[in-house]
Length: 455
Image (cartoon, rainbow, N blue to C red; front, side, top):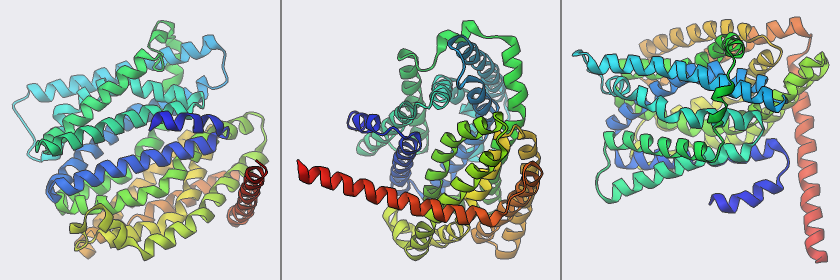
């Protein structure tokens, strides 16, 4: 499959399109893997698996949030020597962080005290190994983003996921699939992927000798604020996960996550555009072009909002069909309505996400970090109130709107200090950009048809 994709990706010069295709492919592959697990593991087991994966993802945010944005801004557009220094310093800092995780892991394993909750116990047994295994592929992904090699980023992600799916199917055929073997699959797939990045030189392991303590400190100084942004974003999901797991049980967590995972298709364009818009936003800021910074914010936030409208409408109308495709036994649960609730709020995501991205680009990660504290508080309070009022996962799903609105209000208020702009302009420019996009796409199709008819 990757061999067939390679010539296609080479022809596509626009990094937005390449990254969008890659992100979409990965989202589909992840959904396929989760759908398989949903069909062959019990609802309660899936809840434990989601809690384990969610906790791993939360802790990984400490590493990714501390290093990724700082790495990209320091590495992009620099000399070969400076790039090697940044990569080596990122390796050094990542090894320190991973070492701390391993020590904590070993202390728990050596202890006679073990937590009764299945998902949390599994996490504390294995998370150190997970971060050792995934370190090379993590650095390779950072390098690929900084160099805008989104084709390479797709290969890194796809190899791991395709291997996971293949091994899960093998376990099903041999009737060996259970919670533990499903987790072991992740170890093997992650290890093979990391080994591939080392062998191909994508992980830049050799640059460790070029590390600079000054650069290590600089990466940490920037990352300590941006990690708050990443950690806060993941804490929203994880606070939902924890509250559902401990107050409503693993089965409710599985049902909630089914609706959530389907909603994450909305994040495909958000993630891909966020990765490719950061460099031009930073460039406009470095050139002191405030107008262009805000224009880019309006353009992409507005464009994605308009493009999401038909997706949201379709999701509201056909939620049961989406659930049935994954596993029909969840049709009798709240999963479809949870999906509808999430999709109802989805049109607010692009504006909130791109305002946060703009704050990072104009070197204000501290504002994002403070904002996310308030968003997290709103989310946790909303979750507890929602569970108390509804007594089920609807309360947690409905509470999602509180942190989104909190983030939008704080980001918009601060960006007004940087440059005054009207929030309504986001949607006006987004509508214009959508029209231009449609016209350009139709023109390209007509040109291809004319070329084909001539030949």
